[in-house]
Length: 281
Ligand code: SAH
Image 1 (cartoon, rainbow, N blue to C red):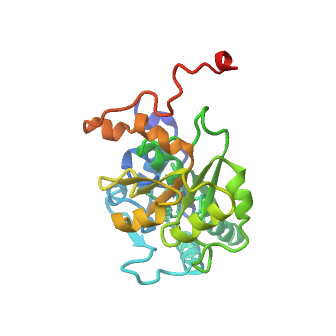
Image 2 (cartoon, rainbow, N blue to C red):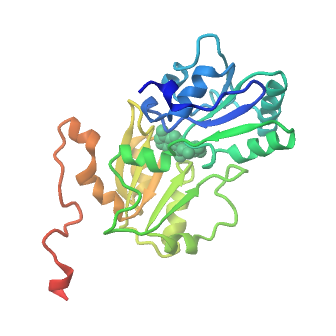
């Protein structure tokens, strides 16, 4: 089936599409995202958007970078929202392209509210968020029946750049067996310390996944207690996810990327096969 047959919505001049580009691998872009790239006049993109995704843009589309570069601060959120409004009022088809999903720690909501306030029509195109899809590329499922029935997503970075104020660490530590942190590398030691203080064991399996789903993806398996030290020793850098919980152990059986490179997989990574709970009861 050709894409035309999917009857994609028209990208109307003077509107803004807020699109999630996924964590890196261009194959994770949605068909609506590709449609937007093929029709946009201007693409305002963030630092986390993979260069291979931008290559899918229509010839002639104007690319505008709206992120931080070389440690220099990028344009403020207000400036970006203002720019989107300006471009739309100019009658362009404006694609606002963000890494992962636009509504997951991506300020997509803020930009969309600014558009609503300026009476500009917009569409949200969800993307594969790194905290789910990026971990899948490391062979770590965010939920698994034998380990967790819930998962918590946390940002390790507040508006001030510090660990966010007002987080209920006891609640986070106890709330869900799996905790996925975005933007956590800078404050890793503090975050791990707060979780342990709130009752999570230092032996809890943990992993750091850097540049997930890109050709330079790196995965470090560790424990909550050793995470900060191991991360520093390995020299891992952002963008990276920090995941805490028994699900990390499943990687021994689910690291499909590693398997493609010859890593042997363990079909029983939790060591529970053959243990019938009904029998031992
Ligand atoms: N909207 C994005 C998140 C933006 S916040 C999403 O849904 O994924 C930026 C943080 O996302 C980074 O600091 C990092 O923690 C995480 N991140 C985004 N892309 C990543 C990738 N390819 N690998 C690892 N972490 C990533």
